[in-house]
Image (cartoon, rainbow, N blue to C red):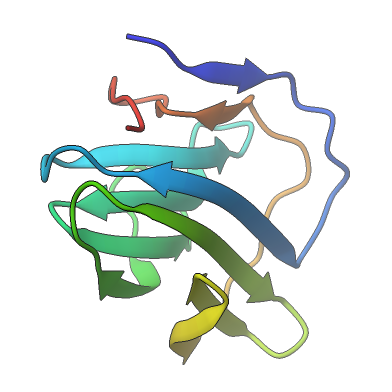
Length: 130
């Protein structure tokens, strides 16, 4: 199992944009990327559950409440995925191949500092992005 982990070198923020290319080869659940606060609570997570893609902002805790947006994908195709959260407006958005596929209002406070930024794994599960 391969994944990327970068040290926490990000300043405090209340807004975020993450972007990646993905190619799904199976419909099993996989974590694509995520970041956690110093207590191990998820801050944001890009994940696919089966063929459903979601960008989630968590409100805290290891069994957190979640605000997310998502869309359905197909196997064996490249996708360019962007997840954004605007802390000023509370707007959570998900874009696939440049098209807005989901948007909703979420109200959260992201903690400053955190653990490593992980690609292809979470702190709680081993999973590989395809």
